Image 1 (cartoon, rainbow, N blue to C red):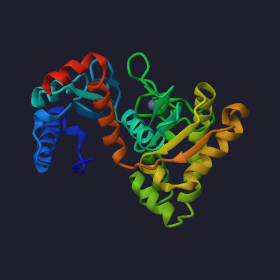
Image 2: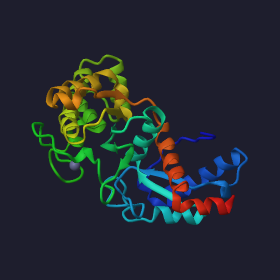
Image 3: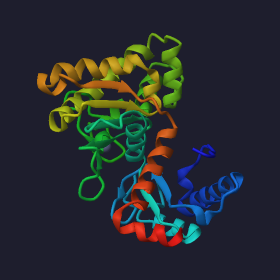
Image 4: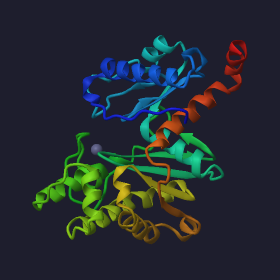
Length: 293
Ligand SMILES: [Zn+2]
């Protein structure tokens, strides 16, 4: 990473405003390191919602009003004159963690536990997105034995509705403890809160119930748990491990590691770069690269 900038962003402002801000900061970073936009191989972007792989457009993203069907790659291409690769944020985090920490691992599932819950699936060393790009939407799998809370997707009993950072914060508020975000929950756990610690472990078990099915279906050798709520550390992981190892077949868990993410907030940046580099070095793109050299 040559230069970086971090800021909170209100995705509700809609695509034009948010992307105009992103473009402005992108241009500033390029000039900060004394380079030119025409030296870019491409632009990589992660969005917190489902992205149609063929077009790079977000499709009915639940928390992104105004973004449905918006041509994000077209907007960025027009500005930079370089191909823009747009993907779901959890997919690029999975790629970043895989590239940085587990390059030799063939089968890995990355789980992001934040305001929502999602996963990125790497099989045979490649990110798998499914037919349209919707694979890995772990947050909307049903948790069979949990309370049937209504989810923001409209269904009831989704994992995200009972085990996300937002859900844990809501449960803490219900017992009179001030908490609104994943970061609030993590702070309480680190301070040894007698309400938050067992709750987070229980949430780990709930996530483990759904992940046990994932383990049976995909037989990964590593499950990486990342996102802000993963900062709660061993309590969350212990809950996940407890249920996954109990409910999965011995052959599937013989060499399975369930670990906390290591790369942190840079995972998305690194993963987006990996996607752009893979695209630029693909056989059918090499002529463009050579022509511009
Ligand atoms: Zn749902």
